Each structure stands twice: as structure tokens, then as C-alpha cells.
Image (cartoon, rainbow, N blue to C red; front, side, top):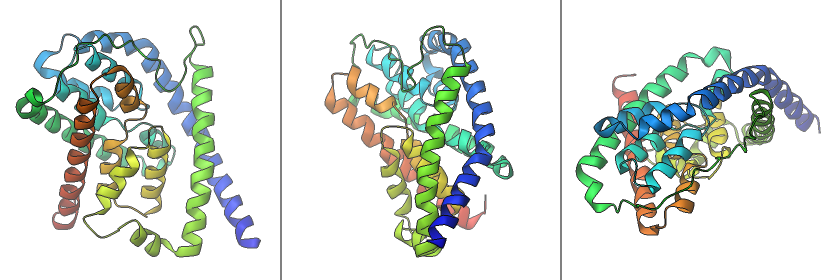
Length: 287
């Protein structure tokens, strides 16, 4: 009982410390989405060959709003497969906000975003150059979806930001509590081994977790990374497949199931390869 009480107290205190940082970050994100969303949507329609670059930078915005937008634009034949993949690979959903809520880990946000932008741009151009003809470009008229947050018209920025903060806080309480319990019972080394630590298979395992179709995936992966249970390359691989609601929306609005399966396969392959390459870079040059 004493052990469980200590775990609960530590979990609640750790999450409460993150709460003001999360709220501030979500307020900034809501401002960005509400006042720049239409601009980015128009920009996507005019970018042409610069699509993967613009897509990668748009995908870096926390939450999954731009991955949802990209899914709809792709289903309508507006953007290329490479641009869609770049947005998906760059999307980290809530991961950036969670890392930002831990002040001593701020610097890792820049490294994560830089790595994901590079992966996204590279993969986007590879797909457009070599795989575009093998993917059917649907010409349906996918209707724009509100995404995962359920923004109400005229709700302003505070209420949606609070709803996102509240939801992520609950996820953090649950997953942090479970993680702390596992660390106490198994030890960090055994937990890391269970997650295929110190093997080339851990990025693949993390990439599978990333496919969980909501923000739970990014919360789990980020907490595992911050606790030291998975490596940075594995976290990056998992967050590359973590599109939030983006892939679910694609499956909903794009009628070509085989095409959606191919996109999922490419997403997984690029994420795992990137994780393995980053792992070797970490070993040999200590990036």
C-alpha cells in the first residue's frame, strides 16, 4: 500500500507541475490554428513542387490539425502523395507540448523537430519522385473534417485550449502512473528490454505504437522517452507514424483502401528506417 501511495503521489505531483506549461502551450497552438489555418490551406493548394517542404513545416505544429487538413486535401486531389506523407511524418501530435512542459528538456524539442523535418522532406520527395505513379491519386471531394478537437464556432481560444489540456492531463495521469508502477516493479532496465531496448527492433515496436489513432500514442511514446525506457531514435520513429487523427480521416474520406494501405506501409517503412539510421548515428557520432 505504501508503494502504491508513493506512486500515486509522485504521479499527481509530476503531472500538476506540467499543467500550467500545457495550458500555455495549448493557448498558443489554438491561436496559431485559428488564425493561420485558412492561410496554410490556401498555401497547400499553390505550393507545387515545394509541397514536401511546406508539408513538413506545417506538420510540426503541435496537435493533428494539419495532418487532418492534409488528409482531406489529398483525398480531393489537391496535394501530392509526397506532401501528404511529409505532413504525416512531421506530425508529433501532443509530444512537443509534453516535452515543453518539462523545462529541463526544452532543448530536445529543437532536435526532435529538426530530425522529423529532415525525415519528412526526404521521404516526401522520394515518394513524389519514385512512388507517385504507383499510388492512385483520388479525385474525390473529401469534406474538411474538424479533426480531433471538436472546435466550436465562436468558442474562442481559451475553452478549446482548456479541453485539450484537460484531456492530455488525464492521459498523462493514467500513463505516467502505469509507467511509474512498471518502473518500480520491473526496473527501468527490464522495462527497456521488454520494449526491445538496445536492439534494432525497438524503432519498429515504437512505430507500431505510433499507429494508435489518437493522441494516446504520442503521450505514451513521449513519456517512455522522457523516462529513459526508449531511446531518442525509437521515439522519433514512433512519432513519425503518430499522425493523431490524420490517418483515420484519410481512411474516412479517401475511398481507395489499397492506396491508404500503401500510404500506411510507406509511413511505417520510412519511420523504422529513420529510427535505425538515427540509432547508428547515435552510436558512432553521438549526435
